[in-house]
Amino acid sequence: MNSATVKRFIAVALAPSLILYSLFVFVPVIWSAYYSLFNWSGIGQAAFIGLQNYKELLSDSIFWHSLGNNVIFVLASVLGQVPLALLLAIILYKSNALQRFLRAAVFMPMVLSTVVIGLIWNYVYHPQIGILNFLLDALNLSALKMEWLSDPDIAIFSLIPPLIWSFVGLYLIIFISALQNIPGELDDAAKIDGAKGFTKLFKITLPMIWGTIQVALILCIAGSLKSFDLVYIMTRGGPAHATELLATYMYNATFSTFRYGYGSTISTAIVIISLLLIGTSQWLTSRRK
Amino acid sequence: MSKLAFHSPYSMKKTYSIRRIVSTIGWIFITIYGILTIYPLFWLILSSFKSNAQFFSEPFALPNQWMFDNFITAWTTSKMGVAFRNSTLVSIIALLFTLLLSGLTSYVLARFNFKLKGLTMLFFVVGMLIPIHSTLVPLFILMKQLSILNSYWALILPYTAFALPTAIFILTAYLSTIPKEIEEAAYIDGTSLWGVFFRIMLPISLPALSTVSILTFLHSWNDFSFALVFISKSTLKTLPLAVSNFADGFQTDYSLTLAAMTLSVIPTIIVFLLFQEQVMKGMTAGAVKG
Image 1 (tube, rainbow over the protein chains, first blue to last red):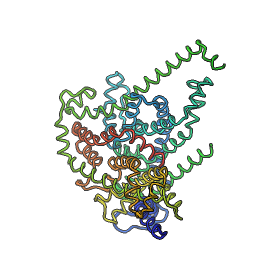
Image 2 (cartoon, each protein chain N blue to C red):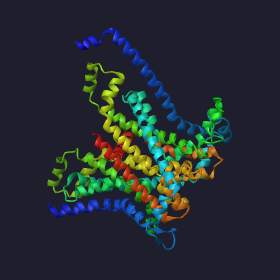
Image 3 (cartoon, rainbow over the protein chains, first blue to last red):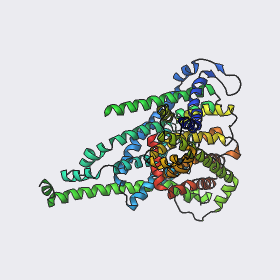
Image 4 (cartoon, chains in turn brown, orange):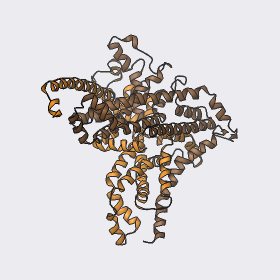
């Protein structure tokens, strides 16, 4: 086969993926950076205003509040999902029928659409008909009943259980495959040395899967920044922006108040913030080694 | 010797009882968590068979009367048939595109050496770092200008584009484990590169392709944000969007909304039950590589 034919094949085979991928993944990022310099309502002429939108963003208290909520989500995932998944993985990493069933049960929410997850939890939290308040009544704990999603002080925290519930399965499976990859000889060596229970856990098991734990932490950070659907379905970012995330704020600025330029500014900020966060976490974990 | 000493009957007894307590606590915890994790779905399916009155008064009870009518009413009043068709169509076309494009790209990346290979790989890696929601606004503007808002393409193209990197990583990794001798005989016989791709590379990648298929299908089937932003015509709405609108519109008719939700999760649950191990492995592989 001559090299011209091969070259042509390579070009033709790669072109569709590269074009589609550039157009729908890279071009949008550059476009939003461009539109972030304009004042534009979506129709009519866009007016160039330089860095005005960024100036506004930096003094926009809702933007900072949304960023804070994103940070709460990141912390909740890092401190909630990872330890819980690790604990479950240590119990469930062998493969008898019950363990396989429980694994599948924990993973199940991963395959459900976020719409269904959000709606189910809306019923859990509903002030009149919600099963949580109903349960509290039944347990004679009526004093603990709350307006789970409509009280601005607690709404963001009410979103954390559904968040954790829906993603624990992912980390569980990641940890289980790491645990199963620990060579059997290590187990034998531990037995000979008399390491058991917690000693074995902290001296052998956890150090062996430390690399995987780091990957999970990075995934958690990146994943929590991507939250949009759950919050949109459950609270639309309300009440009064109490549960607003960067992504929902961007959506609301663009499609509810028709400020395309400002919406583009927020989306550019999301890209910058997540690249910074991912970069920092990569740097931190690679330095540790 | 030390081994013998360690296994004295006394220390064995002691460690055994501590172990037993720890493992009992572990199992109590895991059983409670297992019940908690499965309960919301169980509750959803049970409640969708209840009448509205019973849904309010006895949220934890079994249905007094199994109301199969809920499903029929939900299906007919919410145009779920249309939404099912839209979701199926969009997910399957996006899946076929993803398989073809990622298959070709992976074949080239796994089997040929060329100048820009490293750069091409890097391109797909960097793209995975871009948060999907930051593209919503600019993609909306882009599609408006291409006049493909409110069409199947508005979903098929982005679903394919965002599925590509994971698919390419899974396929390239799989192909690089397969010896090149397999296709070398075909080259000597004069088979063209396209022939080798369709007749040899695709069939031998079948295990990896099936993982990619499950992943891509579930992603497109469950997507909400793209559908929310790019589709406003009711005849083009996909299931998640239709269910969410239905929930807004029938606020007080809870059993009907629950029935619609139940109908929408049936296909994904079937896929999950059938391909459990593959779904779990595929989704983790996809996530870890991302």
